[in-house]
Amino acid sequence: MQYYLKKYGKYVEITGYKNINFSCAEAFLKKDRKMQNHNIEVQFFDADLIATEQHLYFAVLNALEAFKSKSNLSKSLAMETILYASAQRQIQKAISKSGIKSESTNLAAVIISQDKSGLKTVLDALTVDLGKEPDESLLKMTTQKLKRLKETFQISEKEFEIVSKDKEEKMALVDLVIEHMALLATQL
Image: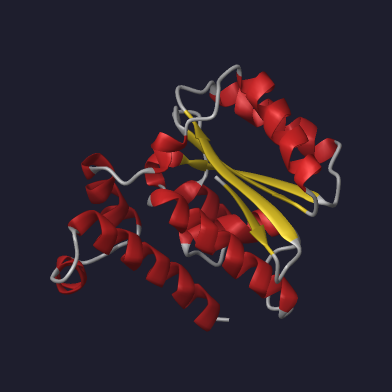
């Protein structure tokens, strides 16, 4: 899914890739970071720990806002995005909580660019390097993700029960994950 965030002058692509080879994803990031164009940022996540594309969309918004207000914790927008997506203040904890690992098979990708053509170029290169077509269905909330995300984000049964009273369980969890991310900004 592609977005244009007018307030920040940025284009954002949020997508997923199913059955990826971790070493291909890792090699892409290393190659991308060496040739880093300061107008384009790429970050990967374990898609099984992402509570819909909204989760990543709000992580990007929070990261952009942090840079705008000069309250960012990291030097790169990509790293700031994973901090928010994981609701962590430390990079290592953020990566271990939401980043891809050697056992990850489903990847969520966020690409942030100042122009639409740069976004497409990186997305096309990523698709070629991974040898897979993007699959946004990986970003949907599933029953399998529900339990894992509650554990990962330390959402108590009481907290979940209160929010899910008026909503479908899956959407309640998405809201809680986004709320946990938003709390990171208040801890600065």
